[in-house]
Every structure is written in C-alpha cells, then in structure tokens.
Length: 495
Ligand SMILES: Cc1cc2nc3c(=O)[nH]c(=O)nc-3n(C[C@H](O)[C@H](O)[C@H](O)COP(=O)(O)OP(=O)(O)OC[C@H]3O[C@@H](n4cnc5c(N)ncnc54)[C@H](O)[C@@H]3O)c2cc1C
Image (tube, rainbow, N blue to C red; front, top):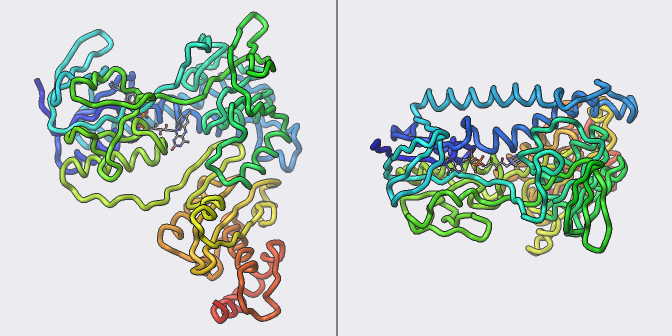
C-alpha cells in the first residue's frame, strides 16, 4: 500500500491548487479524481464550459456589434449546437492538457477512480473497471465539490429536461427554454440562450434575481432582459414538469403554466460527499452534503482532514476555491499562508455581465456607514461610443468621512475584468483621490472609474471654488480631459 504526505480527493480548482502547493514544498502528493480526466466541475461542466459557450454565442451571434448594426445583425445565420460544442471541446482539451502538465511538472501523482475512506488514514480508490487500490496518507484534503440538485419530482431525461451538467450535451438548439432557478447559473444560461434568440422563461420562487447584488445593477439588468423579450416568472414555484411529443409543460404553483421545448433545472447544488464514507472518519455534513471547516485554516473537526472549495459552501467560486486549497495545503504542512483580504470580486457572466467587490448600498446602510455614490454610464465614455455600447454602468461607494473606497458594482461589457482595478484600490485602502488624480488610458471603459469618482466627489460635502462645484457625471469628461491638473490642485486644497 503506497503512503503519501498528502492525498487530495477531487481535481477541481481547490484540489489542484492544494496539490501543487504541497508539491512545491516537497511533499509527496496524490490526487484522486473520479471523472475521466482531471479538472473538476470547473473545467468539465461548470466555469470553463459555460464561459466558453457564452463567448462562442457572443461571437457567432454578433451580439457585441448589435448596438451599431441593429438587433437583426448576425455573424452566423444558423447557429447550431455543433457550432457551440466544437469550440467547447477544443477549450476543454486545452485546459485539461495544461492541468495534466502542471501535475506532471510538479510531480503530483494522479489516479482516476472513486475515493472513499476506510479509516482515518486510509482510502480505497475504485476505478471504472472495479479495480480497488488502497492508499494511506498523513493529511487529506476533501475537494470533492458539488453536483446538481435533482429533486425527484422533476423528470430529468437528459434531453428535454436537463440539469446544468447535461445542458452541455445539447443535441439541437431549442426554440424555447424554461429555466428553473434564477441563481447565478440559471441566470447566466438564461441570458446566453436569449442572446441566441431562443425564447427564454426564467422561473424562481423568490421575488427578485440575485439578492446579493446591488439593486440598481439588478434593475438595469432586469430591464435589459425584459427589453429583449425574456419572460420572468418570479414568486413562482415549479411544481411539476410534463414532457410529451410537443415539448415540456411546467406547472407553477398558483395554476400558471409555462410551455417550452426544453427545461433546464438549475435550482441548487449538493456537496458531493455521499460516497466518501465519512462515518469512517467521524465527519458529518449538513443537509446539503456540505462540510464545516475552520474558515482560516480549512481544517475540519478531524484535524488531519481539510476541506476546501464548493464542498464547504459559500462563496462557491472557482476563484475562491483555488485560494482555499492553497491555504489548506500551507496550513497542513506548517507553512505560513496569508489569509486573503476580506473583499474578493464576484463575477456573474450573464449577458450583460456583472461584477462587484466590497459593500453594497444596503450593506453600508446596515453597517451605519455614511457614504456617497458616484456613477459612470459606459455610453458616456468614448470607448463606449466606439464599441456601440448602449447599456451598462459602474457605481462606486465612498465613505463620507475618510473618502475611502467601500465598493464597486459594475454591470455591462468588461465588468468582470474592470472590477480588478477597484479590487486593488479597495484592498489597499485607497480613496477617491486615487481615481481623481491618476491618468487612465483613453479611450477605455476603465475611464469609468474616473468619471464615477468625479461624480461622487461632486456630490460630497466640501468647500470648493465655484467653478468646480455642481459638475455632473455628464460634465466629467470635460473636467477630466480639459483641466486635470487644475482640478487636482483644487481637490488637494479642498480635501
Ligand atoms: C454552470 C457553472 C458555472 C460556473 N461559473 C463560474 C464562474 O464563472 N466563475 C467561478 O469562479 N466559478 C464558477 N462556477 C463555480 C465553480 O465551478 C466551482 O466553484 C468550482 O469548480 C469548485 O471547485 P472545487 O475544487 O470545489 O471542486 P469541483 O470543481 O467541483 O471538482 C470536484 C471534483 O471532485 C471529484 N470528486 C467528487 N467526489 C469524488 C470522490 N469520491 N472521489 C474522487 N473524486 C471525486 C469530482 O469528480 C470533481 O472532478 C460555476 C459552476 C457551475 C456549475
């Protein structure tokens, strides 16, 4: 029986980062993966496939050009599921190859098969041909992730009624699709299909989309969805789905009915812990199969067993999972690891995309922080004009007393990239001055930071020379371009 310093179960972002980190500090590492290839949900059914699909749809549909050429504009007229899947497979293959190479380079061993505990230091791995191998280890990381929640009242058949894994096996593009669950995954897929001109109905029992997102962003987002013909059935629970030769019928509570060619059920995910035989090591999960850990070390109640990634719940992002894996591996082998800063970015790759970091207005009010807001609309930037952008904006919150940046919220083109400027300033404790005093490339959407900061500055209480007071966001281009030095010196005097 082979012994390792560290056995990692699951090869998604958390497992991968933990394994490489442990290998870098000269530990012997084994990664066990039950899928056919390494990469986890992130590479095979989650992050990368959905983002590749999104990119393909935006490119082939000509979505980004429609601001100029009209809603009827298409790059490719008849987009088929083959068009979508071809690029998907190329991207996934490339991702897996990079990952396999990374493991090989770092001398991380891998074995394909289902892992389960035999006792506190032993696992057995069963491969596709039922061959069982045993391994022992000093430390373990459970990075098993999640799988789609599949309630028994939904008649999943892999073709007409699918979950978010099965949607990637799409044989034909439906003319209409009903999506049950308006969380991040449901909303992303709803907007991707809508960009393909598929008729979409989004169903959710709550009364709003994505409650953790700033309300102004959601208002803009929902307006955009309705404007392009998406139907939202909020406050509606899907009670039952019937499938016949003419398509699917979804019965909602309250008696309403939705008809569609296809149903995507994307209402929640469960921790993939059921097959681990956790009883053998004395670990318990919550009702959704998730594990509890100490949030600074990622240690479970059993001190040599760590857990990281989606299996420990919120925020369930590939980005945060990687960091958790790295910190867990460092802690397991006594290496100091800095805890990540309090604020991390959240990206929602819908069409249009959204991203945010820091506090929302609601949170600022709840925490009793006095703040001011600045807004920049992308259509007010030169880059926005060049790109034909009609919607989208950036909103920044600043503390009134210290002028420190409290939060950035962006909806629209490039949101998930742009957010990192705000992230750097926020986590380094920067203030409004940073944005006002620095020069941004022109023309860029990032210029929105300066415009939004000036917008906030104009609203903030101060004793300023008449000429600068009362500027509005619309005036800010002129202020920023025409008299930056002048403005900065006035600002320095005033602040
Ligand atoms: C549709 C979708 C879109 C997403 N989009 C984004 C996004 O845009 N950005 C983002 O940051 N995040 C996104 N996520 C979330 C992201 O995919 C997850 O946060 C991330 O994959 C979690 O990583 P993980 O390491 O916890 O495990 P996972 O990636 O879930 O991988 C776990 C692995 O463990 C394996 N495993 C499970 N049990 C066993 C066992 N007993 N033995 C051996 N192997 C086992 C599984 O086969 C799997 O390969 C998305 C998720 C979905 C579903």
